Length: 361
Image 1 (cartoon, rainbow, N blue to C red):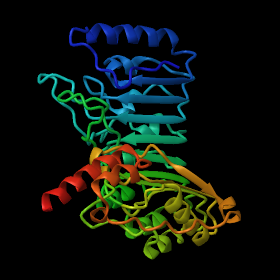
Image 2 (tube, rainbow, N blue to C red):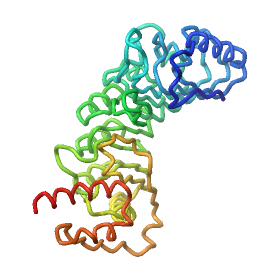
Image 3 (cartoon, helix red, strand yellow):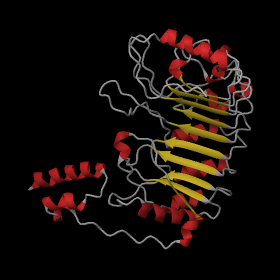
């Protein structure tokens, strides 16, 4: 396996052309026996499609799109044995004005010429990041594909303030996700689907997924904005459960749910939500939930999942959390003592609330 750089900013004096040529020579000398390749798009040269990969089964491109741009079917032109494909493109904020900044969404496929379905017909898993809603590549996925993941990954570098997270990414909305589903409705063998959404999933979207992919066994629905204009959804929303109950053979569910501001203990509310989902969907074997309602401001991807299975029913139910007193009822000196156990993001929120209270006195 050859892995390219991830999250590394190269020095401006670096000869990118020479680096790409050196990388091409390395790949040409090892391609005959290579079975797995993970490489940064910054290291891919225009001659990359000419390299033959007779044994390559897993191909991953990270970070930015190649310069000049190479479509995904061209990248995989000489990979007849390919089984797993991951195109994890992110926004590129480091290129100079002459090259132009590249922001998502990206067009990964081509309208004509070498199509992905004809070049790599035996693909078993495809992961795409920040693709266009009507990207040609979606309609050209092999019809026998069993696993599809549509992500919205963010760049790790921001050239202005050095922030480790870049918010320029392109998650699907509920409406654009419906259009994307029509693009991939020919995947009659799909059993695993992951969608990165901008907002909390609506029951109507889940109901459409059931119609298009009734045979799904694994479903992941994450969202980037945990607090949106429509308010925070109820953890035990009956409409959500009813839509998930329509899947006849769903076995594994990964879903990002929001919780009340004061549900500070991730194990309490999540365990209750897991019990609610497992109890309402008899076919489920595992439930994975995320608990990051404060991170929406930073645009973090869901990186922490808590998993439960049916052994949960052999444990006593989680008691309801005690109500916390209002901050107005607590003396300022006591605030820090009472919230010492709360993560650092809570401290920021309490500081803001403390300033608001003092400004009103």
